[in-house]
Image (tube, rainbow, N blue to C red; front, side, top):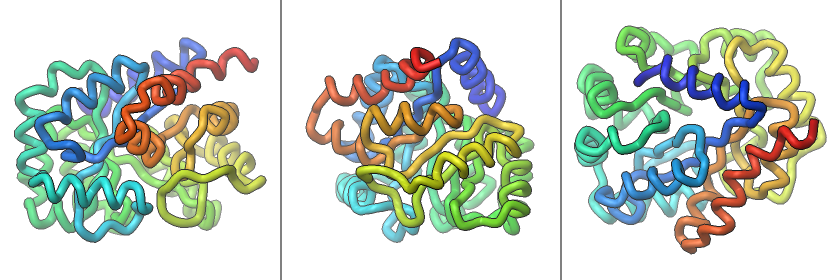
Length: 263
């Protein structure tokens, strides 16, 4: 488990000629008791790893779909403690890496020491913290490094090259390439400059580069994966889970395995 597990899993997928697909779900959307069943479905459909959002009342990076999922989770009684408790009991059933996406406020409220300890005990392999800039890495980064939990950094379209280089050097597990200016949510397409952005990140990043935000269709997955190592998909995955559209969900995840046919 931990950073090494995440990195080795990615290496195996990429060496096989496929691309990485990381679906995002909101913990507690549908009840915390159903979390493992959701994880197993996504694993069985071919997910490389799974990003689990921690419901929070004041998110800064989440678009409407993920915000609504967070509200449903909070209304169902989901808490950070209940999510950790569930994973401590059932994490071994899931054979792929798990990534938490949360904000610093819940971590502070929980206490950093307790949070890091519970991440290890619950089998959390990596963290994404959108409101933790690299200048404040020392708030939790050293504790995570000592615990073997990767801290993934986000690279935005508006950051200058010097900052992107520093972010890429600091990122562990993979570098999260944000593909739009704004919050998460399905989009019809992407700016024509996104390919250059991803190529630039690939050139400077010592870890795999995954594109995320706005990806909603298999053709988006194939298009963006052709210039980086894979994708993270959230809002569309949540929509398809809500609709119980298993065929579309399977097709979306499997599209990352079709990129090798383009070469």
